[in-house]
Image 1 (cartoon, rainbow, N blue to C red):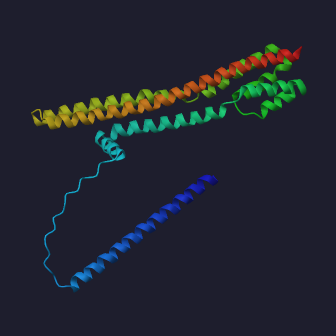
Image 2 (image 1 turned 30 degrees about the vertical axis):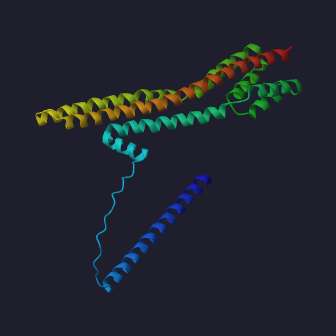
Length: 269
């Protein structure tokens, strides 16, 4: 909360500073205009030679301006829905990436600590190590160690069962991301079909095939498809990154679970 309040305070100060700067600039502009008007009235009019102004080239539109213009041309209806799909998909992707990065654990280091704890302090010392370590692998180790007093088979069942629970937590909300990947191009295609229908309606009303009407309708129709495909491509890249991260963590979980069972067999003898 402190960070949020500090960010809001800084944004408010920047907004006030910008407002004051604009106010001072407007006051200076008004003062200079009034002074110039007074001097013009005081002086006698003199004939001046005509000044030929050179034509200045127009400034090129930036990428942001072009994107905004294309978005408006595509229509707020379907383009807005595609934009919402992009925002929600990116929110899910960023949340998953942060969660998976926090869930990543150095399995070799954890196994070494558990091995040392089992050798020196027994199961309780190993459970303390797992309790103080973050990540799904440490949670699986804790469940296996907790059931180790009931036998190796019970510990193995606990590891397998709780491993499935942790796998479900790793894959949480990924199905929604795949939904937005499939939904974005579908919405784009639907906007294209509706745009083509509008273009043919305009031709029917005009009673003649006007190239301007046809070209404008087709352009608007294709813009929705382009934006839908771009959104799907962006979300697909994040989806593949997340799936690769999940597979890596799951492989580490399986390898570490085998190592834990080997340690329990080793120290049960």
